[in-house]
Image (cartoon, rainbow, N blue to C red):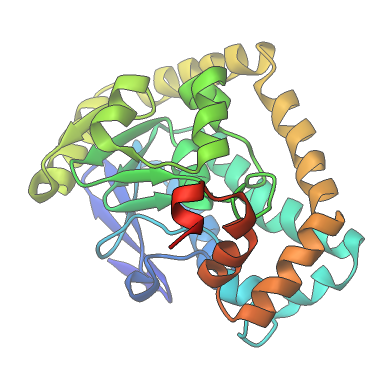
Length: 285
């Protein structure tokens, strides 16, 4: 096993299991985690002895999404966050650190499997969707509440391709979560297994896929990804990224950021913002 700060890589025969190690914050994705994950995934892809890559998250949850404290919160700014002081810098930050790192996983030449338990939220869902397959524990919960938080989703809008357009609209507009069984029914995940057997069942699937000759697996993956590209998947992602950037510059988004800072928490900000629009039964409380 090798360790690179917040990411570990285990070699399990022909399988490399790469695990995010920020369990104390539900594997919220800060700069250090994203860069370490990128290095680990590329290293596994370059290792001829590795045939399948499993992406996991330590602790109770796969990933709670982007680490908002690191991006817009109280933590000391790193070089990437400092870019966000201008619209051009913010676009560079999100394109190079979020979009390009995710697409690198999507286009890896080897089969990838996301091993998901607990919360898989917003950018956590985006990350899981970059993998070819998803095995979910029976306690997995998928959500993207970013529209409720006044953002235009995350950088890559994966939901129409994972859930279908009509369900994606409901999922994004309401911010409601999907449990593992519903996610399986909709085709977001391939298998649902008991939480206690998640690692074992994911590894067994990876080992079965590893029996396919590497060149065969790689070429068929590329062909399937090309099928999705011809259907417009990557064009749609590029379009949404620009929508996402535009939304950052709206008065709605800037007002929400100011209100969040003033209230001290996203939950309090949303409660105040939503009060005039709440059902009458709730407003009278």
